[in-house]
Image (cartoon, rainbow, N blue to C red; front, top):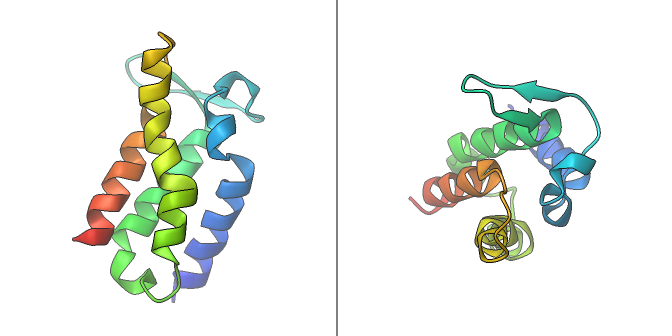
Amino acid sequence: DLAPVILHMLHMVSIAVPARLQQQQQQLPGPAVTVPGGAVYPGLLLLKEAVYEAVGLAAYDLHDFVDYQAWLRSSLIPEMMAVQQQHQQQQRLLPLLPRAAARLVGRWVA
């Protein structure tokens, strides 16, 4: 059963990359990863995206383990709104996590 592993990873990346810190990507610790096309992402951001994908894929199995409403309000909505706030401030933010959060919401409610 992978539920405990996925939940542990979700907890760890939520601590390592809270929504307010992901907006300041230069301050994230750890190595950066250059992806095809030349974009450079902090490794922790890619890890958080991967965990969100795992949660989305296992949404049916995790339904009894995750308080989705609380998580939506405390983390997912602020992460999705970060891009809009950065756009309004004319700053560039890599939309990696807001997109992953939106996909996760879509899988969770489907």
